[in-house]
Length: 296
Image (cartoon, rainbow, N blue to C red; front, side, top):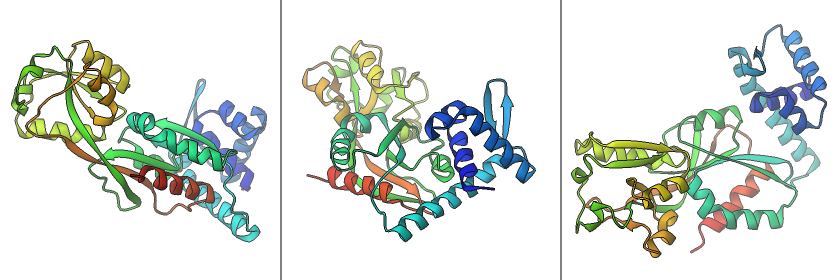
């Protein structure tokens, strides 16, 4: 079992594609396939199920991926420590909520890229589900959430700030004319939910449940922008970060409803796997993010 085989295996496991892994590693696809085959023969196990043109990790492959991450992290840590090369290089994969990516991330990227132009950053729009699993597997190096909290003993969580989440409608929606909107007024309404910004959605759904509001029409979308335009078109109401709707509210294309519950305050959380080595590259990105996001 060689280090280069483990690197190829981890890359294939992350992409679930021999072709994409070959592009990432600058190898011929046949070379990557040969390395994986040699690794499987060496260990006497099958690491991937081949399903036509698709592949997926076997249970044994998932187990090896956990150890491969630990081994390769230790290799990187050893090399950096022994050589004294602490300059950020390579790439990071980071999961972000869409509204965070649109409204908070750009100044972070500008500051980071100006200092470390050779680092490749790959961003994945995320939901709450599967986040911890991806951090543990090493598929994701770092994640951000807009949430009241996350409970996982093997994840480290740092609060960078807070966001207000508000209930919004179009200016012609019947609820926009009310001086005060109570949660039970939402019964029978059409509510638009986000799949990609949905960590605060659980808080909203819990409020609906507590008030026994279980009769409403539900639409789910993979884009906050689609939700905003649908609400502006009069399709229904939604709950979104205030920063994400500020411009539309200013233009009077959206209305923040006078909800009796008030705004929901959620934390901006930065999350990483506690047992994973914090490389110079990851450490640099985390520090730049702290400095930018926490600026007044």
